[in-house]
Image (cartoon, rainbow, N blue to C red; front, side, top):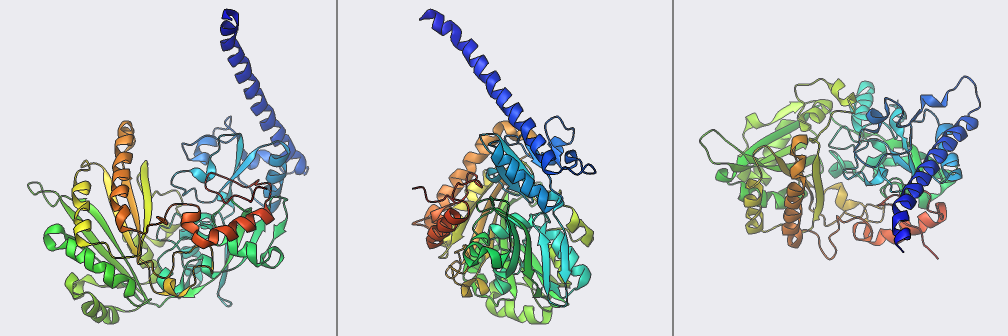
Length: 500
């Protein structure tokens, strides 16, 4: 028996080395397979592949998660088809990335050998002003799409995200909302065609894939059904002049009462108004006590002469004055909302500019009934206990408008009529504070637990899976079973097929 115990460490080493050899072999075989798939001598597969031996590998990965065996940055459809074929042949899983905006990294990590298809080079934006359409490849960021459309027409755009560095692929497939959702619905609601590659390497469009799969990929989550390479989106109209305001109120300026009132006002404003608020701690001056600041921000599709009387009628408690309202162009309002008023629109092309300080923890909720004022007041001590150097922000984004008018089964995204607003909770800290990361994550969990009784519940619908997709989940599973019965495209939050 003792000899067996003595041999166990050696056995472990042998098994570990064998596993390393398997990884190395599958990795090398995979690259050979890609090369043979592209026998053209003028093309080198090394131009689109990165392994840990490449000096550029870490920069391309740009993440701190389990590392893929290979990163492929395809230049054309055949590179994607080859990656699917060779991954299946050598038992490697695939994860697809467009903007890399998955907060937890769940959509591009794996506990088994895997390959990342990074669509960073798939980023063309082809604007058709005459037909009011745009073809956008999944690797483009929202800011690029805003910018390219605005180059061609200042009165057209698309219902894009609040954050301009979000990748188009994840934004649309995840059912992302944005600055024009109350007027035109989600970007997913405005998709009219796609270019899609399935697990067999077939290239499909809306007509050849059928309406069930076309329904599923517009909000059913990326990486579950195949790879959407391009989206054809219907453009929407914006006026030559829009109006914004952003005003802050502290607890001493009745922020609690104003926040409570906002819940009744914002979801019922005209569709032309995008309304959000942010809650953060605030230090007014050296000798003053820390307090909480609630900042109310709106973007209106029209002139100040229309918005001023509207806000005076609907939300007089906020105490807005004429000087608070600023007229500007649509593209300038995108910069304003992102806190980039001093920048030129070219900043929208910068995909690597972070909107939140790394590292951070973020969670979400949907709210169906106004939160009582006394419950909102219970947030303040939790916010004020956060260290001075730590960024803790909550963002409330109003729904209503067109979001109420689209059926919850129209696309997989079901949070439509009856959803007053969405909450984002964020806490961020500097790299040197990572030793305290569990403390900050615990704070987030405590806050999230506190809000549980006041947000959507039974179930809490911001939780992924059946709770999130509601009655659309079974249809998504059915589509998944038809298009990818072997579950080749999967990750920790993907839609599962039926297992018989």
